[in-house]
Image (cartoon, rainbow over all chains, first blue to last red; front, side, top):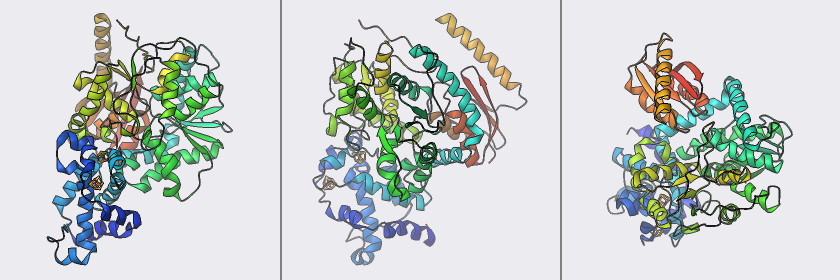
Length: 438
Length: 99
Ligand code: SF4
Ligand code: SF4
């Protein structure tokens, strides 16, 4: 590591040195309570994945370069030089973290390891060691925003096909999926793929909402990468679109981190106030049912269903009651995971891990707690309002032989509204027949 | 069921032949059907180094998100999408490794 690189890495710590960082670095008593809270440490026993040790790596660099004792007697005061070995360790412990914040929930001082690892990610990026695939995904999202006119025609064509599917599902030839509709009340930011467009479209249509579909996907790989500037540019694509169309509300698809970015991070990143309300999909479904805008037909599903609280929807955004309320309207046999809500185990795929092949084996191994939890319920259907969680749980299903189906909250509601089995898939033109229960 | 599978296999073979007739020499075939965003792009990125510079990957995806994702990825990584075409639900990309 040359001098300029070292300066860039330590410069991040220097610039980011605020009360929160100093508090977290100072206050840890090494009580190790967090070791039993982190699914990654529990599954691997590897100290690299111990929450307190992940933070310790930053603390040691801080001691080495920013304290007198660490500068002169680093070995005595546990100061550590920034070298390839340290950066390798920092990379693995940082980009492996799913940002689930279970450790923070259990820590007596509420040390936010995820926040600290945000600093570590900035240090890694300064060293030219940001996760490559996340860098590429963030770059692609930015390029899409800059060149949207190149893709618009093809997206509009595809949307026509999705619209036809909607019309056939709701049996109404006037049902629409408007795009770029000025004066719409709601802009819905989906994920790529009809599975994230059709179920909300069914619900919005049934509720008679004045809505429009965003040209941009809500997911934000700049956030997972830990690059706030890239994260801001990616989110800004939706902010600009919503502002141009003068919508009152932006609804974020069932994607935990995307909601968090828009609701809690964008205003700080961009230093501007959002001119619209931000709503999570789970929130709007609950609202529409509660206020009577959609009427759930009687005859609740009696299959055993379980619900997985996505960390970004539950612990990190506080939606525990809304999804349960919605589920209680469509299914009569909900069996909770143990533990659940604030104490729920992370599925193991968050933090962008499902998109990083280098962590494939690791995330399956560290998802064993989740697999066990699901198995214990004996439920055949797992509902979870987060794409990351669903992809991971589907992978766990294969590896741990869980014999389950995984679906979203909008999916079960939309299916109920159109009189289908709640487990029916919404893939384009390939709606599967649900499996019959013996 | 088996009949349908055989039919779709034959159709997919037919499609392969068709793409092979576009004039580009295909160095690697990548079946990304059924994978959801962002995995098609991730797999192309992972695989591109497996062909030599100048080599071409023929990737078949079904996720509509890939229509913008893969060309955008190519732009930012300095690679090139030679062709994008749709064949029913399949989206076929010819991706050239430029560097
Ligand atoms: S629980 Fe909190 S105080 Fe205890 S070791 Fe972990 S981070 Fe430190
Ligand atoms: S946020 Fe989750 S994955 Fe990260 S260290 Fe804490 S418990 Fe482990």
